[in-house]
Length: 271
Image (spheres, rainbow, N blue to C red):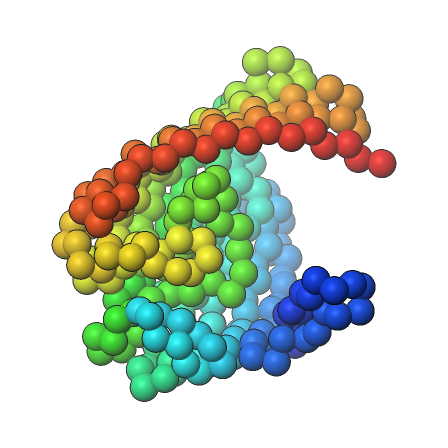
């Protein structure tokens, strides 16, 4: 068993030198996360971990629907992750409640990801799918605030271009990973994305809405096609390339937004 306790405030970066960074007094994130090793004899031999958690996020300048005010949000949930034979899973869910200005918070998030290795070798092809749900609604003052919010996270999981975030989002993304050569790994994914609530906006990675999408009544956000290749030239040197195409759906096009392409590449050297 493992216990992690934390109480954090972000740093507000300055631009006048090394000593002008200050602690941001408006935001605070604290909580406890437990970790348990699931008995390996379960499920016929597995390597699984179970992590329940209880968190609290306070933000004096929370922003939803063009409004700014104090927010206190609590999270209770759990994560189950690890390997069961050739299957790798990462499942988590959390319930969110609290208060934002004059609204009660009532939100959910569920993330279900799994991949299956088609062979015993580490380089065998893998097929997988992730299904994600983040509740939405109330961001513009309609009843309780049902918009889910992640206090941290990796938003490239939804879009390399940072167009999507797990708030008012339903996403289904099948994927496949192959290694055409021992030093090359290629992953392709096709993600379909919808809004949970058509009376709320589509939100981008920084938590801000795409202006005008709250007035469009179509659920479909769009389709996201992604390709990533990693070439490990040596154990310390690798090259990564990424391409993504966002085919904007009616939730975006109805508010004046259009398709987008993203390209990126970089070289990594580990000392």
